[in-house]
Amino acid sequence: MQYVTRLIMAIKKYILTIGFISSAISFICLLSGCEDSTQPKVGIIQAADHEALILSREGVIESLKKSGFIPERNLDVKVESAQSTPALASQIAQKFVGNGCDVLVAIGTMPTQAALQAAQGSGVPVIYASVTDPKSAKLQGNITGVSDYIDPEIQFAAFKEIMPTLKKIGVIYNPGEQNSEALIKPQLAAAKKLGLEIVFVSAPKTSDVYAAALSLKGKVDAIFIDNDNTVLSAFDSVIKAGREIKIPVFVSDTDLVEKGALAAMGPNQQRVGFMAGEMVATLLKMEKGKRDASKIQAQGAPVPHLHLNLTAAETLEIKASDAVTKKALKIY
Image (tube, rainbow, N blue to C red):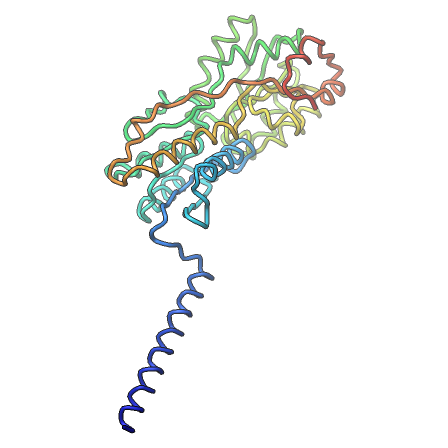
């Protein structure tokens, strides 16, 4: 009898020890960020850290939540920035594929190309957002997404209506960005059609942007910043230079008008991301071996809207007509 009692006590002690160890492991996992392996995994690679891409990423997350995929509840989401560095984008993409991500989301052209390369042969689908020209970027295979391209003719026509004296536009861009290179021909064609001249100035690094903007003094009537991640990452420098040389700044990103641009004609970047998020959700609802992004129709940018900064206009002694202000979706 005494032997049986000791045996029972030993078993109880063993069970308590195992329970303690299990609880400790759970607690450690909680602290270290361990995820439930049964949760679907999404890896988001952002080209750089600027307003447009941040809003696009937020749109993706918002869309996933609306579809029932809640981060830290039933979805494992990892977000990393490539910091405008192709090599870093490739490293992040390879890591996400190696970690078993179910879908890669790439925001911007450069990380999209990196994600597509890393995912080849793995069966991992890629969804892109805020890619300017998917065709010239050669995005083929298990991939689809949403472009943010707006015809420069629509943009230049709006800018000319705001500023009838506009004759020469200075465009600052990074020649190393495929998305910016892809815009040169349509920008030149649009300018020719509208009787405008474009002066291109290169800025390969963010540290070059301020000097590039200053170099346009006396050469142009306005500066235009399109979907160039290098220049957008240093947008405050463009505004600073524009104020110093008294030249208005036009943009394609509507969210930058509040930061000092005179006007923007462009899509809602958060909406671009939201549309991409819907595609991600569609894939996550499929069986793992049947997720083919190419079967989902790629989408163009949402309808562009005019945003206008009347404070900037007043500072530059530009009088926006009633016709222009009536067309503006948002006025600052």
